[in-house]
Each structure stands twice: as C-alpha cells, then as structure tokens.
Amino acid sequence: MRKFIISINLVLVIVSCSSQKAKLKIEQKIQHIENGIAEFTTPLAIFEADSPKTQNIKTLSERMRHYKVPGVSIAVINNYKIEWIKGYGVIKAGSGTAVTPETFFQAASSTKLLTSIISLHFVEQGRFDLDEDVNTYLKSWKIPENDFTREKKITLRLLLTHQAGINRPDGGFSWEDGSIPSLIEVLKGEAPAQNNPASVEFVPGTKWQYSNMGYVVIQLLLEDVLGKPFPQIAQETVFQPLGMRSSTLVYPLRTDLKATEAVPHDAEGKAHDPVMASSAVAHGGLMTTPSAFARLAVELMRAYQGQSNRILSQAMVQRTFHPELDLDPNIFGVPIAEGLGVFLYGQGQNLSFAHPGSNYPGATCWLIGFPESGQGAVIMTNGAGGELLSMEILAAIKREYD
Image (cartoon, rainbow, N blue to C red):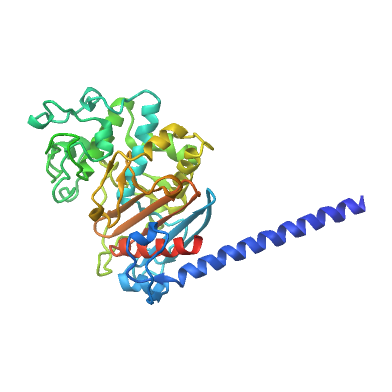
C-alpha cells in the first residue's frame, strides 16, 4: 500500500512539473508577442509564410499609445483549444478600470460570421434553401422589386456573400435622438430611422458589394420564419450550446454588465457613447469577449475536421469555407475570397478564415482561424486605431506560433 501511495505521489509531482513547464512556455510566448510588435505590418504578413522584415520592433503598450487605443483584449487558439486570454489597458481613457478577459467589447461586423453560421444551421435543418427567392420566406416586409430583380431574384446565398445588390446604406445607420427604430423602420428607412431604405442597386449575382443592410434582411428572414427575436435565436442556436455566456445581441447591456463594457474611442483617443441599435443587430450588434467569440472559431475548426457538429456538420462547414467568388486584392491588400459569410485566404493546408469588424465611433474586432492547424486568434479593441493595431498583433502572434 505504501509503495502504491508513493507511486501515486510521484505521478502527481511529474504531472505538476509538466503543467508548470507548459504554463511557463505559454507565458514566454505571451511576453515575446507583447515585446515584439512590428510597426507598419501589412495584412499580407498575417497570412504569408515570410513576414516582411522590419527593424521597428515595439512593445504592445507603445503601439497602443501610438494608435491611441486605450484597451485591447486577446484570445489565442492553439491545437483547437483556447491557449491563453489576456486584457491590456483600460475600458475608458482616464478611468483606471482595467480591461480583463471578462470585459465586453463590440464585435462590430465580425457579427456577420455569427449571423451566417446561424443561417446555415437552419439551412441544414431544412428551414431555408440557399438558392430560393427570399421574398418567398419574408412575411412582415418584402424586398422591393425593380428592373434589377425582374429576372434574377435575391437568395440567402447572395445575401451572405454580399452579391444581392442591396445598398450599403449610404452614411450607415442612424436615428433620431431618444428613439430607436424597429427592424422594419430600418429596412423601410422610416422615422425614427434616418438611413436610406433597403433597395436593390444592381442585378443580383453580377458583382460584390459589401452591405450591412443585406444582413439586416437576413435578420428579418430568420425572425419571420422562426417566429423569434434574433437575439433569442442566437442564444438558443449558438451561445448556449457553445457555452458563450459572455455574449449577447441585446443592447444596452444589463445594469450589472455595464461596468464591464469597453467604451469606444475615436482616432484621437477621445471617448464616445456607443452608437448601438437594439433592433437591427445581425450586421454588427454582437457584444462579447474574445474568449467567448473564440469558442465559435474553435467549434468551426473542429467541425471542419469532423470532430464536432454542435452547430454545423462537417460538410456544411467545409461548404462555408469554400470560395463563392474571388475578391479584388485591393480590398484587404491580399488575394482573398468570399465564403458563405466569411473571408477566406489560401487553400488546403494553408486555408484560413477571417472576419474583421469596425464600429463607429471606435471599436474593432478581428477573428481568424486556420482549420488545418487548429490555430487562430480573436483581438478586440475600443479604439478606431485598433484596425491597424490588430494587424500588427496578429502578425506577432503568427511569428511566435509558427
């Protein structure tokens, strides 16, 4: 018995030492990233095997000050698991309240990836057909017909891939002070909404035009067919199954969560009240943490490998990550393709999927994953300069984890 106890203790000591070494190795990686941010990194450096060489290596805190970004939160994925999460800076300039892994950020347009995955879940359930005229599903409002839609109808596939011809709209979404428009008022462009109404500007399927309004149409499509508010659909379809407890499409946040919300800052580092609607949210209304959002990226990569099917089957994820069309490289500075609601780069062993996001007046998000290696990252900031800062951080993560 004594020998057995000694053996058990020895095993525990070995396991503990191994765990400590693993933690130390991860901490060293974090430090290398924090102290190895390269200036002026191009988007190409995130994807290419050989990143551009530079002599301008700075710390993360220095680059945050340069871009006037008060707060950053990072989650890194390795081997199909979230390896580490960490927050930097403060939720509001001058506040002294530190960013933590529990701080809520705006996912901005990265929300579109979530909307796409929800839509494709119900395609697999037989509730929608990717290539059916969406007006046959819509009940409370229809896409206005015009000469452009006479022969070619708008489908869910075209909406997901920004080929439906739906306007952007010009100037983004806005509304009269003190009043939030309903989803229908946004689509119709009626008061208190101040945006242009949804309209078709070219023959569907003939070109690519990024459209927030197209994803608002998808939101109504889901709500009309399923008979539930979109935030509830997201909760039941994705958040709950994946344990994404720090995620919501309901805004404003509950009173007990407001203290954990990162405040947006403009390019000069000045804090502003968030500009968020409580109705039209499918295009950019997700509030989450990098660690919670990374759970979705992990699930998609594991499903791609046939290791999970909690939201989508392997076949559907592979279909999602299959290029629908090639985009002009000048859009992101790299040759990139459009999948079903996600941007794609490379193929085979080098395939990556990503979706950036940026909300006015200053909140950004970057989600990226490499399904063949099980690596990826989610970076969220509360500053308009966070778009460029996130690219530099992503390149530093890539160099460390290659």
